[in-house]
Amino acid sequence: MRKVSLLLTPIILAVFMLLLSACAGNSSNQPVSPTENGGPDTDTTAVPTEEPTPAPTEVPWKVDENGRRLAGTDSGLTRDGTPKKYFTISFDDGITQDKRIIEIYNKYNFKGTFFINTGLFGENWTWVGQTLGMPSLSHLRWTVDEFKTGIYDGQDVESHTFQHPSLKDYSKNAVINQVEVDITNIYDLTGICPVGMAWPGGDTEYTKTTMEIVRDNTSAKFARATTATNGFKLPKSFLKWQPTCSITENAVLKLAEKFLEKEAESDMLFYVWGHGYELDYYDIWDRLDELIKMMTEAEDVICVTNAEFYWLFCDEIPPIK
Image (cartoon, rainbow, N blue to C red; front, side, top):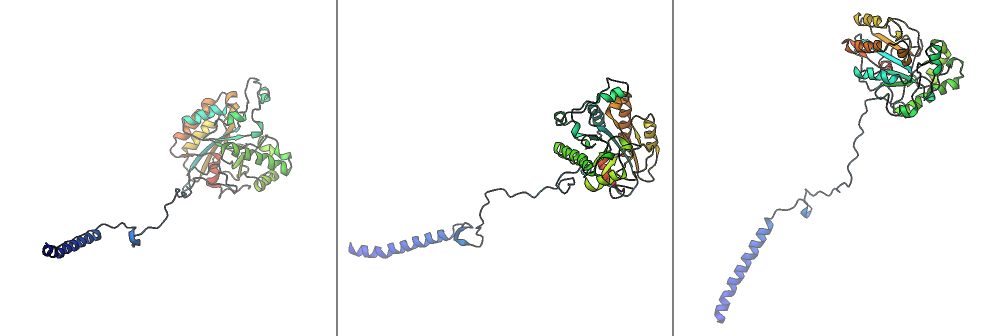
């Protein structure tokens, strides 16, 4: 028995060595994780716990030095050097007839300009109808809460000064205050900063000095006057921006036809202005509807707000002549 045991010992050792060799071979052929053994593919970068901050998205509008979005800068309109025909229209005071005006605009996918007085929200000027011999005529301004419902959303809202005073008799600081407070209020209400105004009371209510005060000390870049030119030339200056005509003029549709018939040998502008109460007084709502229809359906007319027109020509037309 002892002899057999001695003979088996080398055999057992040989088998044991073969098993060890096989195990070692199998271990070396196992796939190795990239992060094991500190190999060249080891990734030691920490996994972020938060999403990276995205790059800021470019906005399609300009802002002023205070970061306020400027009216009329997101139209996408540019000039290519060829003469064009432009149409714009504005209404003053921010009164309840503006809602019906905007309904007409929306029917034709049109945007207009409205000059408002934020210091007169809710005011009822009954004297307007009394002066015109129609006591029932409404000249009622929106309240601030009504304004906040979005009545003018999508439209161009500009300044008509804070309280509609005669600026020609105001001190420098008073003029600045009337314009800047109104502009600031409109921005606070709409998130869009006005770049223009309309002179309260029309062409008799400002002077060259007043224009210089506005130019040098306020955010207003343009100011609409009231004297009609009955023509289609570009304004000579932006702070005395005279319109083509009023919506109350009987010839407004004839002027519209004349404008459409003309070929643009140079840039042309057809500018109509008015007050919403005048549409009631003269019963000319159909006239407004027809005018907007004519302009929006014309293939060679570019419809713009006052602010949009300003940005197209601000490098060409001076503030004061």
